[in-house]
Image 1: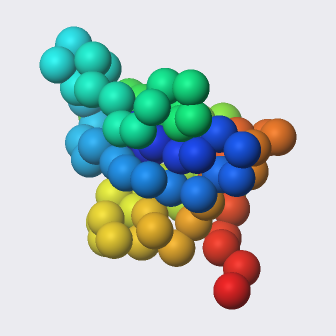
Image 2: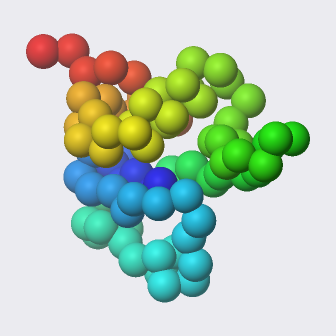
Image 3: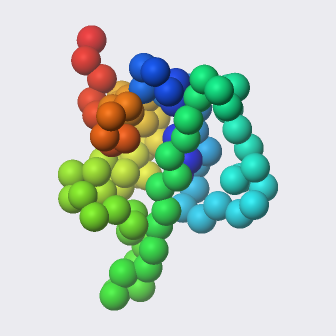
Length: 91
């Protein structure tokens, strides 16, 4: 999954779903490059041959797995612009 967000606020502006991204996905940009950033969440095969997010942080890995199951969940989160981690939106 690729997440695009406003660099100053961390608000999501779009995503590209999927576990594996080719050049055509990596060439896409949502918003102006001077105002938005992106995070690419890569997946890898584990020892059992199943794909899982290639993220060391267990909490972040769980969030990505949950979003993979229900893609609309991504918009319940934003990016912490300091840590570059997904955090739950506050209302």
